[in-house]
Amino acid sequence: RRSYEYIEVSEPRPGVGQVTLNRPKALNALCSPLIAELNKALCDFQASPTVAAVVLTGSERAFAAGADIKEMAPLTFSEAYTTSFIESWSDLTTSLKKPLIAAVSGHALGGGCELALMADVLYCTATANFGQPEIKLGTIPGAGGSQRLTRAVGKSKAMELILTGKSFSGEEAERWGVAARVFPSYEALMEGAFKTAEIIAGYSKVAVQAAKEVVNKSQDLPLRDGVEYERRVFHALFGSQDQKIGMKAFAEKKKPEWSHQ
Ligand code: CAA
Image 1 (cartoon, rainbow, N blue to C red):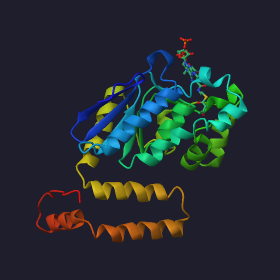
Image 2 (image 1 turned 90 degrees about the horizontal axis):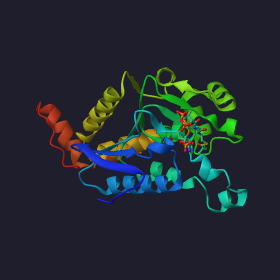
Image 3 (image 1 turned 45 degrees about the vertical axis):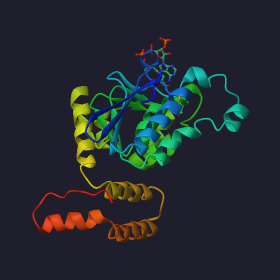
Image 4 (image 1 turned 60 degrees about the horizontal axis):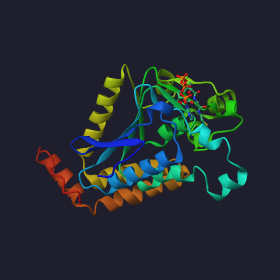
């Protein structure tokens, strides 16, 4: 296993990988080397035969307090433009085909909120502190916040949040559909995230990858194209062994033994 400076990597449960952002002195501010490490770790989990779902978390105090303001402060337009600053953050949404659960406690601000929004499933504590405060720094969200938050909460609420920089709580995140579930404590949050990851890891890897792929298509495609795309992938799964295994096991009232083929 690689050794990292800004993250920790583990396999806490069978089939479950975990990446813990670990830059406590800066509240997990997402400097470029941290994002590079995160991308490497997720690539390794993608290639791993033992990991089927991944949990991404920070500390109890901070998931991540944003992109690294000290790194960004002196950047010029041409430096940001020619190095495609922040573009590599999106790698994790394309390179990881296995489900990613963000477990958010404490601050998830700016790039931290945007990173959480990139996950497939977002869980948080009731007191988690989400927000897009970039406007207070004289800038705007740069890692997809204006697009993903708007899709999650609708235009009017996203406008209000992004134009005022006001935070919202984990409770609100759950009520508005940003978070799938909210938990009363950090311990309950992590247990909930691991349990869901274990459930996913118990299914056919082929079906899980297809399910993630088609749900994500709904974010990009018009409805008719999306439904058609889903149907093509659904048809394709009749070519998998696991569809036969799953349906045969149902008829025989047995637990399916997936071949992952
Ligand atoms: N970048 C760099 N350093 C950061 C940071 C960030 N985003 N957030 C916190 N830190 C550092 C602080 O500078 C401080 O370091 P020092 O001890 O060396 O001074 C340390 O983390 C602890 O922070 P605080 O003392 O401020 O802790 P607090 O509990 O008083 O406040 C906080 C916590 C409300 C999260 C506050 O730190 C804060 O407002 N952080 C900035 C949040 C923010 O604006 N994020 C958006 C960044 S822009 C962005 O993300 C662009 C994009 O869309 C990609």
